Image 1 (tube, rainbow, N blue to C red):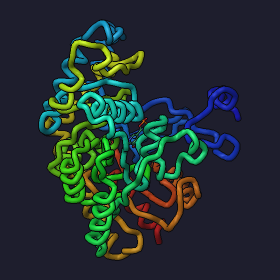
Image 2 (cartoon, rainbow, N blue to C red):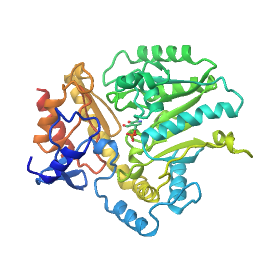
Image 3 (cartoon, helix red, strand yellow):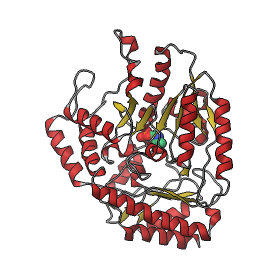
Image 4 (cartoon, helix red, strand yellow):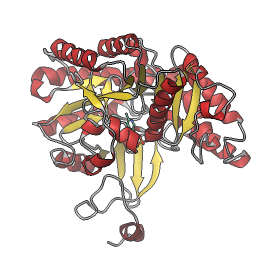
Length: 428
Ligand SMILES: Cc1ncc(COP(=O)(O)O)c(C=O)c1O
């Protein structure tokens, strides 16, 4: 190993989701520009996974970089229990304006897992505050993934990632998720079965149901129809429980509209945001609640308050990045790019599905996916394909047998077409 950075890394760094013994020595990233990442040895790779689904407008996006630099010179961080500040207030107002309905109250945290953790804790405390302490149960969906902290792992326990920690998780009942694809003839039957299961589980002790709307990300880019999300929302509401939508991955335009819930015509009680929140520049999470929900926490005593916080809550740098990203996201140029990206994904998926229905090709907004074969995360079925893409200067990260393209919105039609052509030639 001749690179000194790789040597330091090998000695001192513990990488996420990685087996150091069997994994390759990782390339050293030195620069990011647009949809491209450059490594220390001069290789350029097309980032087809938006760097773990966070990057929206491209690496090094100049307007976000400039907003960050300006903010760093003014105020880098301040204790948010004792102060407010302009970027936090403006970003919260911007999110409220971008979100549907009366999702108006923003609670900032650090990442997707904490955004989920906050929503779960809020939901449970809410029912104590409104005099229904018996509502303590949470429901999730099969193969849903919500993050790596204990609450998030519990509501995502069927994703299969958390076997080592099963003893520390609290019990959460799972409802089937009617995953569907282009040309799926069974979708209605699967949805009916899932809704029947939900009906059976929605007892008076249920506090909240958590769902990744339209796409289960880490579970394998499993997609459902918007009408299923609406049907879930209706049932949850009728049962007097709360609906938490985890839009950590689907938020900020990935599925077409700014938020997946809009496609389903649903306003959840709580929505969890992160990843694209800062355009992919800084870690940050937000849990946004409806106006009525927040009222329950207002009173004369501290024990009615939501006693939760993180050292870096509402970090001004993250908020400044978020504001700059939101300005780009809501502009005409970004909308046009997302529409063009979506049209290309739809066309390639439809074409492939006609010829190779067994791959279960599917797309939703800017995201497209297919399954190589039956398998699970880490089983190596996508490994050869990943290597082939890497050698062609493109980064993919299959989830077991699931191959997907989730590029930043600045990717060009030519770049994405190259990725699809390579995928199809590899499929044979
Ligand atoms: C839907 C969803 N929720 C939560 C998380 C957790 O986010 P983080 O990795 O930022 O903690 C993820 C991460 O992939 C996710 O896809």
